[in-house]
Image (cartoon, rainbow, N blue to C red; front, top):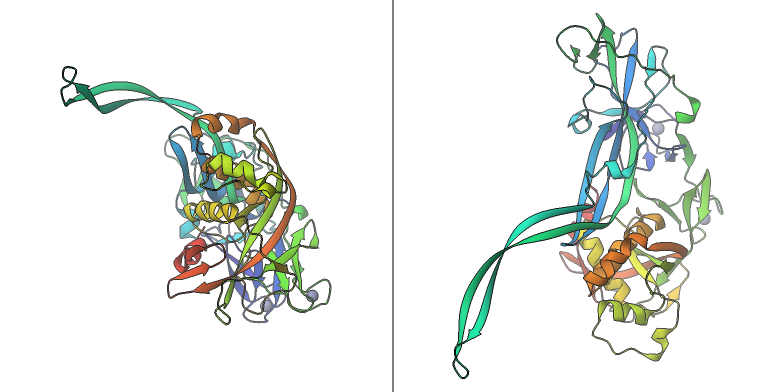
Length: 438
Ligand SMILES: [Zn+2]
Ligand SMILES: [Zn+2]
């Protein structure tokens, strides 16, 4: 989904991606952080620019990673959906492929524009048509071994039976998700709604006009464009278009948009004892989270070893808190995200940190501590060796964030892979490319 906008500084056209948080103008080199008051509001442009009255119909737009923990296992996927935000018999229930096919723009004030206010609230549970419990009949094929006589050899008997299998949804999570409102333009002619993008009537037959309340563009819908200079030293911060953390090499600091300004982010750079000198040309960011888990005892590393039945002999210090979860702070495919979170958390990194930004480039941080937090119950379920016991605990599990630290890890590389030698964890380079589309 692409959004056309004009540089607030010089007016040059800029094309933004849905996941962009920074507007960078190629013409005047301005870089601004985009902050909506609540969520981004986009619209399509009517085919006819001279329409006298345009009525904008709202659709919720949701995009993100979806994890679900079910009886049959843990699944993940990427959701990309739109659905109508008002009750209506005539408007299409979804925008279909339109957001991919046509460029959008931010909603702006216009004299001829009226907006139908959404009257269906957005709830993430709408995104997945879910049933908490479903049953299906499965055919089970088994081989039984029956001994012939008391001393005889065994005979194989094939048994086929029908079984009722219960599939229960214990937990679902949405991570790295964006929610926005997309308005599609309509006009009324001969008592019928017409789609103003296609310039055609929405339906045939006798006119049936549904009436809606209207609202006009509100100042609160406008996006704030904020400077990306370091609040401490005024230096240009380092950030990519979809970064949620800005790094300053001038004064060694990290910043995150909170409320209406930039707030400091605690960070550390991990020292590697295993990477050969000169072999590190890239750093990857991770969130180290200290959390409080309610509904399952998980407050020291020994608890994790027991939960996952890890092949480790419990060391004396492992029974003491704190215990940290580690998750990647950059976008990637959900399956790799789960694997890396497990590997980094199991590694229980106890090496040294220092408090300066590395000299080598750092992969852009585009997942927030909240994203990390949203994924933790799924990761805990993933760890559990005894799924039958742990899955039913998930609905009542509560996790509270106590501390988030951004840790930058040095990686070595081959042609296709990054490797963190201290954790002994690899990441295919193409995963970073794929992550850009999530
Ligand atoms: Zn510009
Ligand atoms: Zn600075």
